[in-house]
Length: 484
Image (cartoon, rainbow, N blue to C red; front, side, top):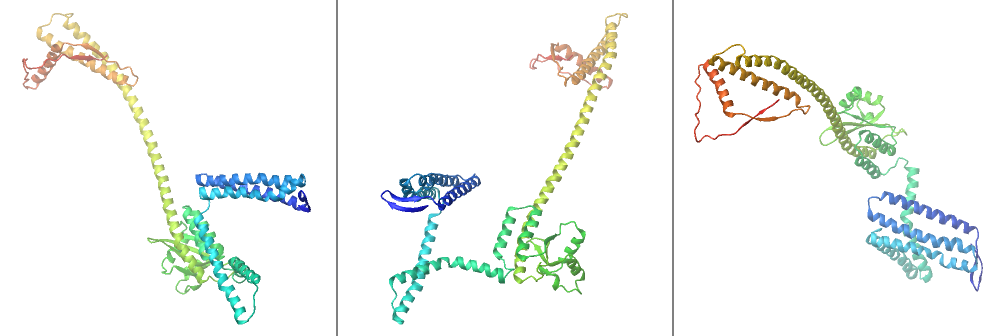
C-alpha cells in the first residue's frame, strides 16, 4: 500500500503491489498454521493437556485472522478513514494471538516458563559479560593509552554490535563448520548421531530382517560402505556357516581382510576376499557369540580409519543385543506356531476318536436293543409254560415240584425285568426313559430272595444263617420300582 498524503482525516492510503502480496502472505500463513495445528491435534489424541494447548492456539489464530483480514484487506479498499483505521489498528490484531498463546503457556504448560526465564537470564548475563570484557577494555585502551576520546553514541554502537556478533557467533560457526567439512572432510560424520539413530532402531524393532536392513543403512551411509551384511550362526547357508565358524577361532573383535596372514589363514582370506568383505566385526553378547557383521570396502576405495573401526565395534555390541532379542522373539513365535500345530493335530485326533466312540456307542445301543428283544422272546415262552404247569394245565404237581417251578418262574420274571432295564439304557438318549413306581409286598420279596439263596447254599453245602424278627429291628416300607 502506498501512502499518498496526510490530511485532516489521517493517512490517505492507496493499495499497491504490496497489498496483493499481503493478501497472499495472510492466506498462506493462516493455512499453514491451521493445517499444522490439525496435524498436532491428531498426534496428541491421547493427551488432554496437549489438546487444550492446541485449542487455545487455534482460537487465537482464528480470532487474529478475522480482524487481520478486515483491517488489512477489506478496509483499505473502502475510503480514507477506513484506510487510516487499518493502518493504526491492523497490526494490533496480533495481540489476540499473543493473549491466547499466553493462556496456553500459563494454564496448560505449553512452555516451561522456568526454563525460558533461565535461558533468557543466561543470555542476558552472557551478553553483559561480553560487553564488559570487550567494550570496556577498548574504551580504556583508547582513552588512557591513546589519549583519545570515544563518543557515547559510538560506545553504545560498539556494545550493540558486540552483542549481535555474540548472538550470531554460534550460528556462523556451525555454518562454516559444515562448509569446511564438506570441502576438507568429505568422509566426516557425527559419531554420536549415528549411534543415536541406531539405538532408536533397536529400541523400536524386534524384527530380525528389519534390524539387519535398518542397521546396514544407518551404518553404511556415513561409512560409505559398499555393503553391510550379517553372517549369523543360525543361518542355514552351509558355506557361510563354515566361514563363520573359522572366524570364531580369531580372538580379535575386528578382523581385517587386508591384515590377514595369507600363509596361515589362506581359507579365511579366500572366503572374505571372494565375498568382497573388508572388515568382519564380531557380534558378541555377554553370554554367546551370534556371528559377524560383514563390512564391504568403501565406495571411494579408501581404507577404514580408527574412528570407523571404533564406531563399528560399538555398533556391533548394540546390534548383537538387538539381534539376540529378535532371535529369541522368533524362537518364541516358532514355538507358538509349533505348539499350535500340535494342538490342532491333537484336536483332529480327538475329534476322530470322539467320532469313533460315538459310532461304537451307537453300535452298543443297537446291540443292546437287538439283544434285549431277542432275549425277551424265549423268556416269554418259558414264563408262559411255567405258568401253565403251575396252574395245573398239564396235570397235578406235588408241592416240592410247585416250589421249584415257582422259583424258576420268579427267576424268569427277574430276567424279564433285567432285559427291560437294558432296553431303557438304549432309550436314555431319546428321552423315552420312564420310571413307574408300584407297591410291592416286602415280605414276599424277602422270602423269595431267601429261597433262592437257600438253594444256592444247599448246592455248595454252605450254611445260611438268618436273623429272626426281633422287636428292636426297624421295619421299613419299601417300594420296588418296576421299569417297563
